[in-house]
Every structure is written in structure tokens, then in C-alpha cells.
Length: 332
Image 1: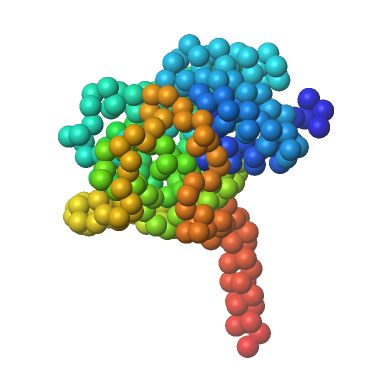
Image 2: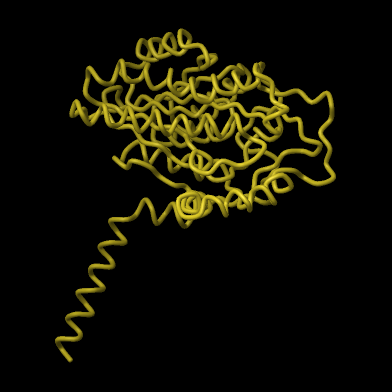
């Protein structure tokens, strides 16, 4: 592509997991992808993969919890590639532990990375997109932004906050009749390295609650959301069920998760070594990868996502079937 046609994309949390898969998807479209994360080794590996897939990469070691670093990174992207077309807020940090076992410092750090990192990224993007009246911001959310679960109070609280912040910003953009669009992609359980390097105070190794999906599935949803003016995109049927359960029967969901949520998030009989490193305050370089340890349990496709992103086709087919049925009745 010429620079005039090349899409410029910023992805936070791009050194591993969903962020790295998102970078891959944009690279396959020939985009210039700015990769933001703390871990240099993971960033360099992700950059190589972006180039191999046909994109152009820029690595920017950034702690998204620092607003000045995020702003400086945005300026560096535009200096290198020109104006930013898409900004994806994906960086996150979590702690697996009952709330009473989480320190104030740990709550603050998880919130600063997951929630405030999204705020800082959104504001850096808006400062550049609003004056030009074009651009898209995609927040990587979660079904946990609607239905909280035990043992992840800091993370769930941050995802709820992101949804509230995003809805507020969206209404402000609509008020000013801006063509800048902001969307949120709600994820299910995903096979990423976060379960290997998150801070945990549980007796057994943390795990996602099945069904589990490969990072490429939400990555495709994020790329789709960046190019379609959809308010929210739910990646899987499990995410849709969790959201509906919270809306229709929250007390039943509370009771169910109180009974099952502790065991479901741990691998029974697999204790966590006491000296295991975690990435809450410092990166863990040797764990940076796109996939986690659950490849044998993870699906690489989501029928619910396909249905969500092909509503027009489905509506057209339904309309055609209705007309055909009506014509058949008249003929008879």
C-alpha cells in the first residue's frame, strides 16, 4: 500500500495474548501497527510477526498506567506513520484472589493499568481524531464488564468502569455530531498467557472458565468493530449468556457463581509455586506469547460472532425466504 492508503493502528498490551493477535490481524491487512507494552522482548517478537504478515511495525515500550508515556507514544506514532486511524485499548492486569486478600497497592495497580490505561489511551486518540473528525477507538472489554465473578474483583471493577466510561464518551461524540466512533468488544474466556503470569494468591493454578477461545477469535472481532459502527460486539455465545443472565436473573447468577466460581477458576491438583513471577508491576519476558497453555481446550471459531457480524446477510436471507414463502402461497 501507499502511505495514503495504509491504515495506522495503535494496539496497547500488544506483546502477548489478545493484543498480539490483534496486531497480527491488522498486519494481514497491510496496516502500520504501533505496538505498545512494557516488555521489550515480547514487543520485538510481535513486531517481527507483524512484518512477516505484511504489516509495518513500530515498537514503543510504554506503561499505559502513565498518562504522559501514553501521550508521548501517540505523538511518536503520528511522527512516524502520520495520523492514527484506529486505537485499540487492550492492556490489562489482574489478580486472582478473594477481595480481602488483595492489598490497596494491588487494587490500585490493576485499576491503573486496566481502567486508567484505557482512559489515557482513549484521550490520546481523541485529541488527534476529533479535530480531524475521523477515526475509530475499540475497547477490549469482557463479559465480566456486565457479570462480575469471584476472585477477580479488581479486574471486574475495571471492566465495569471501562464500559461506563465508553458509554459516556460515545454520547459526547454523538452530541457534537462527530464521525469518530467508539466501540467495545466483549470477550469470553480466552487462551492467553495471563493465566501463567498474573498475580495469584490461590492454592491452585488459575484457569479460564470454559468454553475457551483462541486469541484470534476476539482479534477478528476487534478488526471488524474498527470498521463497522457497531456499539458493542459480543465475541461468543458464552459472553452473550453471561450478559443476559445478569440482566434477567442477577440473584440466581450470584448464587450460581458463589457455588461454582472458585473451583471453576482453578486447576485442581496443580499448585502454584511460591516463587512464580507475575507481571503486575514488572513484565515477565519469557512468558510473552500469543497463546497460553490451554490450546487443547480452546476453539478457533465462534458461530455467535459470525452471526453477529453478518446480520445484514442473515436479514436478507430471512427476507428472501419470507417473500418466497409468500409467493408460493399465492401460487397455490
